[in-house]
Length: 279
Ligand code: SF4
Image (tube, rainbow, N blue to C red; front, side, top):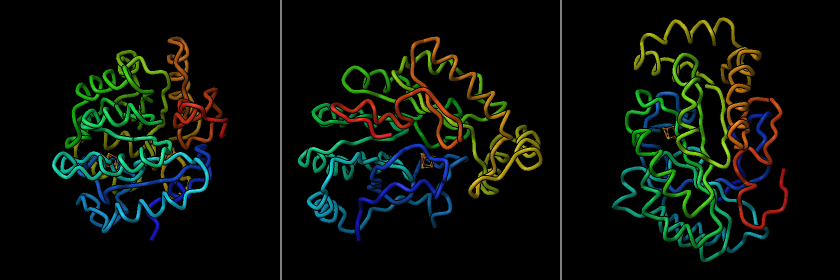
């Protein structure tokens, strides 16, 4: 079985990523974000190692023809707490370095700092998610810690700030996160809901329950299996973030929203060294 797979963002027709390969060293995620989009995967909160992963990854890398971007990870964080002792993600990075591939590391954990020695010698871009919604991300490192990590990474590597998801009444105005990180590029997106994520959010922040229920399930729209805010509301929220980024000279893109943006790529591919235009 292949462990490098074409990225398919839950079949979304409005994804603007372009072709890239997806790789998850672990199945399941320990951060347990209430809004997580991947909880349709059975036992998702249990972090499991993939069997024989390093041998399979080497085999896939040997067969890799082009110089595709490998995105690690899209449906689970590559730095769960177990990684501190296990070092599986670090072993994968060693292989990526050996094969000289482009790696986009998507994480919410400051544990990525441990691997800066390796990453700084690779063609790597880091994408750090910071939302300021700590009550919904109880098991992930706090936002403050992530902002500090972001700044340390930015000293040696390109870093994308993933301000995602943006949740009405909760973090839509927390633009100080963008100001604090001073990123080169921001990718942002409004919250998409499923019934299970709505229940978890409502349980963690009861005051949001009725407001989100109305905005999503009464006034919103369903796109590709997820509930979205209505179009003009989404556009208004994103436009404000885009304008704020522009005022600071930061490029800004939207993820799975169906709106045009000015940035060269959504996920930060344009920040790789020597990349030709992909999208
Ligand atoms: S870090 Fe991402 S994959 Fe992990 S629980 Fe949070 S939203 Fe889900």
